[in-house]
Length: 498
Length: 131
Image (cartoon, rainbow over all chains, first blue to last red):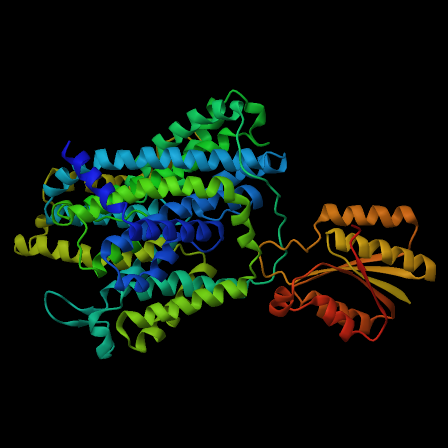
């Protein structure tokens, strides 16, 4: 009951006009970046982070939460009307969604995506309210070795589970960890990787890294692939759904939510896996198997619900343990740190009002998104007519301004460009970006926890294995690492994974 | 000699195409249909997609006009491309469609029609969409 009271208090605070306005800006910007391929919520939060230095932390997070949820809504519009997913979490939506649109059912596809996102987002946020206190109770009991193990699991999961290639994931993670090492070592006071440059003693600011990799890297990549054949956009009126569509949609929405939320909360679960699982499930359970591959509404409803529910799920470990499971959460975590707020179990005690206002704003933002997206989806699609040079000029402007604003030193601009080139090279060679960001943000914290446990044990390696939690986590890590070997030798080849 | 039509999949573009066909037949000349896009946006409504082109091809074949369709992708503005083509090829007439523009819109984005009118050496026929 205590949480419910807190939540009500949160609603009371969020109703303030300024907060509502920021939530509205957040969801507008979020939907816009969701619609545009290549520009995602993670990049946007990183770009806007320096802009929010003048705001109250609560207000900044209300806006960021709006961007996060809005990105999940916007991605589906591009998937359905253009067959080009706006976000990686909407890849599956394009399979059936675009077929539906081609068959003249774009309005229904957009409607089931928007309403499904709303349903899943609302249920997901409710689950967040219910589940997080338990996770916090659990997290309070964790010691330094357990945290270290959990972060190791994050690293391993993000490199091994996501993406096509483990080796590429590992390369990206090591790049991130190396960038995270730059600066003065907190324990011994030694300078590490500073190359004798005094400004580097404080380390490289996460904002510079995130903006460089996401924004500058993407801008260079787009500049290198600028001219391409414009794709056909399917004209659509106001989204709506008939009775039959509702009947066919509500179960996939709920099932999608059930997939999305837990996966969002797992390290490296993210939104991609549950959307695929949801699609596969709907394909198996549908009463209209003949429609799959030709535009089945279930194939849009399920995955769209799944990606929004996973967005809510992502916030559970982010707020309760301080573990980000996707790029946007990682950048939001960096934002918390830049305000001097440490996410983790103590967050709910020290910054209770901030957390509950944030959660209340998620409910409000979700409602706003539904109201915005249902009538305005065709208008959002117009954003795709903006010539990309204009778009990326704006992004580069914000990127350089933001990077400079962090410390007001020109060196950051050089770093920004260098990291931008790194981001470009990573895209060129197919390295995933997420492990790098996770490495930069979690690396120093993992080091802190690991060394703390070693100090407690007087340097004995056994100090890293603290209790049952770390045993379990290490077991999972071994399992994840050994899985390809196990699969090759133990599982017979006939069980091909679809 | 050739009659060059600046084609856009819109009522104005269709009107230009009709006028171009009439002119080509009257003069007994070839018809060159040009459609362009800078290709720097994800979506360009003025870029003719395959169904539009197929429909144009069908019409022209049915009318028995000697024709050629050219799509220019990733070059300059539509106006620049048309002026350049009119210079390079042996063009006797350029046909374009005019759309209604506000003064402010023209001030900000400029007018392709104006650029073509001023830039080409040959006569330009500007038609409006059928009301």
